[in-house]
Structures are given as structure tokens and as C-alpha cells.
Length: 326
Ligand code: SAM
Ligand code: SF4
Image (spheres, rainbow, N blue to C red):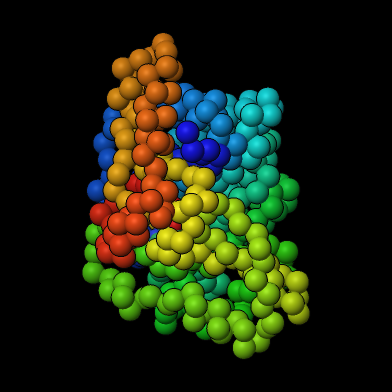
């Protein structure tokens, strides 16, 4: 079986923001019974850990709005204690961190990704519709005070945060936070926004950075789409994620689990396996679930062997990021 060491899990499709590139303002969320319960999430993740997953990233929707989510984090920390799991982490919009940062650290979380596309209060309210910047900045402070290492994820949006490229980079350098830019992806039906207008290729963003800094490509690979450069003048490391560039399939070590228990083997493909059915049908045994996971992973595209997979990825995805987990 292909080694899968990294699992991303969406624990909810709900969110307290409505980022324009992610959701429509009046999103329909899934009925509760469709979602994996916290106990089911625990069994599911623990089975993956048993199969060799060493890094678990919790995402959503907004993971920290799921009721009692700390119960799940606290429970997962036993796999850190045993050494089977090397890293437990999350991607969050930061809105609830002032409440949970300390508890997350106590559960063994050491690094987190916080999504933040602008440092301007008005623009922040515009892009997230429901979010408020001061609350997120307070969350970032709380995270750092709790001893969590922070990486800021910025979606690159043409005409929106182009003018903040250097101010965001400087802010992250000053605050000693890592920084990654994400290319915007067309995903799901999110209302009227014309996303073509928002598309800012990271190649252009990189060229802009190179006007001011000397960029050195770093060999670092994490098995995913991120590439890193070092700014020689400051020593700062900056990441670039181009989700639609599928040139890393051979080394891809990750799979995604949706909040309803579907396993997606590849972000660019619709192929998925329903893991909720074997989980719910067998409350006392993980053997059928284990077999279903192995079977699904054996279908994971290998890139060159399945070249058609690379021709399929440019179009609109019917899934929402908030469902699959970004
Ligand atoms: N709510 C959490 C957050 O915003 O960090 C976690 C889930 S969110 C779906 C995960 C990441 O996906 C965020 O960094 C978000 O900016 C990114 N994202 C959402 N929609 C996207 C899109 N259409 N293109 C690129 N990135 C997107
Ligand atoms: Fe919510 Fe994250 Fe999507 Fe924004 S990107 S709407 S914070 S799930």
C-alpha cells in the first residue's frame, strides 16, 4: 500500500465567516445526522493512525465552531503521547482562538495555520462578510502567548490584497510567523462573485516579491503542493501553494476526509470512498473500516500512471472547500 502519512479531516462544514471565495452568504449546511459524531471522528482518525498516519490536520468549515471540539483534540492527544502520531494541528480562521488557544496547546498542538487575507479592517469585513479583524488579531495573540507557532495563510486575490504583499510579509517577519500564499481555486457554487477577476497567479506574486528581495528556492518538500523560498535579505521563509498545479502527485502522501466520512484521495479528483457506512455498520470492530481505507488508498492516483487525472483539474470543482476541508 502506498504510504499515507498525512490526513486532513474536516470536522464540520459550518463556519462563522462567509469568505466570498469559499461560501455564499446563505449557505445550506448539512443536516447534523450526516456528520460524523465526535466519537466516530475519533474512531476514524485512530484507525488511520493505526495504518501509519503521523500527521493529522483538523479543518472545516471552521473547526473551532464545532460543539465540544476540544473533547476530540483531548482524545487525539493520546496518540501523541504514544508516539504514533507526530503532529496534531489545525487550520482555523482564528475567530475562536482567544477561547481555545491554551486548551489546544495542552492537548499537544504546537503549530497552527491561521487564514488571514488582509490587515485592513474594512477589507477584512468585506472579504469574510461576517468576520471582524480585531477578534482574529486577538486570537493570534492568544495563540502565540499559549506557545503555539503560527503560520499565516493568505489567499492571493487580484485587486484585493495585491497592495498588501509587502506589508503582510513585513508583519509576519516582525512577529516571527511563517507565511504562505495560496492561489485561489474555483470551487463549488458560491454565489455571484466572479472569481476569474480574483485570480492572481502566484507566479506573478512571486515576481513582485523578487522586485524587492532576492529569492532562493528551498528544496523542502512536504509531500503536498507547497513550495518554499527564502528571502535572502531577511531570512524569512515564504510558501506558495498552487492547488491546481498537479506536479507533485508522485510524492503525495496525503488524503482528506470530509465531515460526512468520505475519503478523497486527491484534491483534483472526484474519486472518493464512503467510510461512514463501514464505520457505522461495525461499531465493535475496526476491521471492515480498515479494509475500506486500504482499498481506497490503493486507488490513489500516482500521477504519471494516471495522466488523465492531470487534465481534469482545471475546471470548477463541485465540492466546497468547507466540506472537503481546505
Ligand atoms: N475555516 C478555516 C480557515 O479559513 O482557515 C479552515 C477551512 S478553510 C476552507 C481552509 C483554507 O482554504 C483557508 O486558508 C481558506 O482561505 C482556503 N480557501 C477557501 N476557499 C478557497 C478557494 N476557493 N481557493 C483557495 N483557497 C481557499
Ligand atoms: Fe469559513 Fe474558512 Fe471558508 Fe472562510 S475560508 S468561509 S473561514 S471555512
